[in-house]
Amino acid sequence: MALPYSVVNQIMGYFGRSVFDPVTEIDRIIPFIGWSFVIYVSLYLYYPAAAWFGRNSDQRVREMFAFYQSLFIMTWAVLLIFIIFPTEIYIREDIPKPVRDGEGFWGLWYGDLMHKTDMPYNAWPSLHVTQSLMIVMLLRRWKIVEGWTEILTWIAWISLCISVLTTKQHFFFDLVTGILTGIACWHLMCVPAIIASSNEEWKSAFPSNID
Image 1 (cartoon, rainbow, N blue to C red):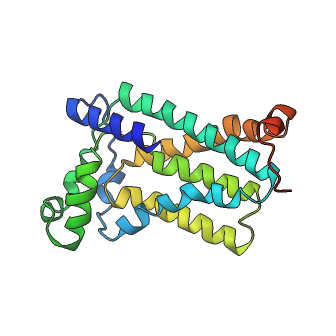
Image 2 (image 1 turned 135 degrees about the vertical axis):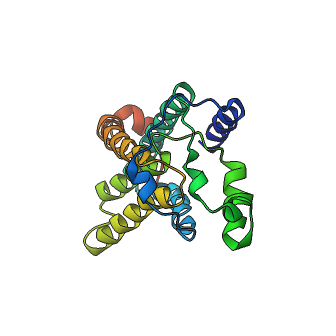
C-alpha cells in the first residue's frame, strides 16, 4: 500500500492542484506539538499487528488475509479520492519556520524527513485514522484486546488521531471523514469478508496445518 500511496502523493504534489478547502476554526486553535511526531509514526505498529495475532489458527489466518484484502481495496478507493479531490494541507504553515526549514531536533524529523517524503496533498479521509481504526476493530473482534488492554488500545488510538492534527499533517475534516470511512469499511467490507473466509473456497485456498 505504501508504493501506490507514495506515487499518488508525489504526482499530486507535482501538479500542486487543490480543489477543496476544509479548514475550520478548530484547525487554527489546535497547536503544533513537535513531539507528537512520535505518536504519529506509531501507526506503523498497527500494520503488522493483524499478521502477528492472526497466525495462531487456520481460521485466524484466513480472517487475517480477508481483512488485509479489504484494507488494501479501501486504501485504493481512498487514493482515488486523493486524485479526484486533491486538497492542499496548507496548515503546515502553522509549524514554526525553523522547524519547516529542518533546523533543530524536530526540524530533522519534520523538515528533512516527513515533509520531503510526504507532500501535503493526500488529505481526506485520513488513512492514518481509517487504517488504524480498522485494525483496532479487528483486534477487538479477535478478543486480543479486552478489559484494561482495550482501554489502553483506545487511548493509544485516540492519541494517534490527535497527533494527525498536532503535527499539522491533517485538517480536522480529514480526521472526521477518516473515522466515518473506517467505521463504514469495517461493517460493509471487513466483517462480510471475515465471515466469508470460513467457507469451503477459502479453506481450500489456505489449507494450513496450524490447528
